[in-house]
Amino acid sequence: MTCVLIADDDIVVRDVVRRYLERDGLVVAVADDGDEALRLLDTNRIDLAVLDVMMPEPDGLALSSRNTYLGAEERKAATVLYRALEAARQEVAAGRRDSLELQRAMRKVLDSEPRASVNYAEIVDAESFEPVVRVTRRSYALLAVHIGRTRLIDNMLIEPVGEELVATL
Image: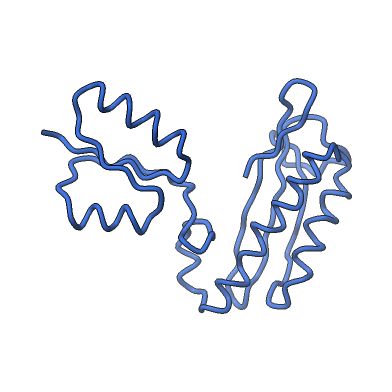
């Protein structure tokens, strides 16, 4: 019997994919993080793996080859990128549309981390990648930050959903 591994940190995605595969008669193994997926791969015969390429590492950092250059203290410091985007997401959820306000929220968090050296924290149009003054259409919050000698980048989509804007990490 074919065994499929589903590795995704989103429980809804895991459950929907699992149901469809089981309905088709496949055996399914499920992991909610990379460490669990590796354990399942070591202990089971897996024929196919369905992986969430955006799934964070166990410490919350995005899965990235650049993270291998970070020491333990730098890894802790690197979570500031996620926290900065989360601050902007909260501002969007509170109805803020002014790019300078969103940038200020990100910068406040980034500036709180002594190991972080900010290259940029910008809000740009999703099509042109030009900076925007006010978020009224699909846009990105973009970060580039050095932690030690390693340059890390991250982003967040901001898009209209009806009359509201929704920011997705």
